[in-house]
Amino acid sequence: MVKTMSQGQPGVGLSAVIRDSEGLLVVAEVEFTPACSSVLLAEAAAIILGLQLAIRWSISRAKVCSDSHTIIHAIQQVSPNFTEWGQLVQKAIHMRDSFQCLEFVFATRQCNNVANSLAKWSRLAQKSAIWTDCLPICVAANLLADKPSVA
Image 1 (cartoon, rainbow, N blue to C red):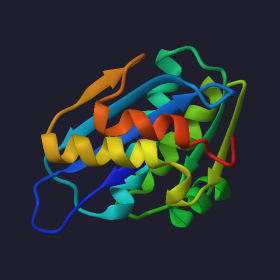
Image 2: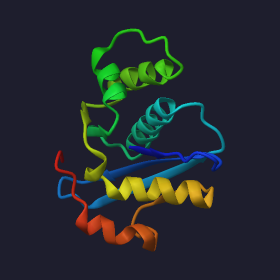
Image 3: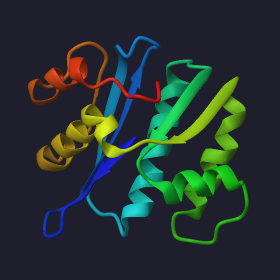
Image 4: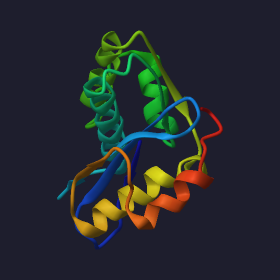
């Protein structure tokens, strides 16, 4: 799950990419949000986007990767969090019950160029979208080259 924000540009792009055990695309979703108050709030929202997508696709075993140490650590701690993004962390923790196996892992941004590119596309186009087979041209080449090392 990834978010992209830029100073002076409107909105934030959130993305979630679900791959199979071979690294092939199952489904990807982006969501454009016109405003977001912080990077950590956007990171947590991207994780929720991915979890909701996995639930809609009846995925029972998942590994959620994020480049936010802070959010991943907060989810792993399973303790109350009173920050502006804390409610989303608690929602992610409660969503564990919807999965047979769910793991939250830190991964560097370089491990997921597909999600980064999709989030950037969403922010620039100011659009939300979902793909199951064919990604936008600006991202498609990354799919073959980008296999997360944590998969």
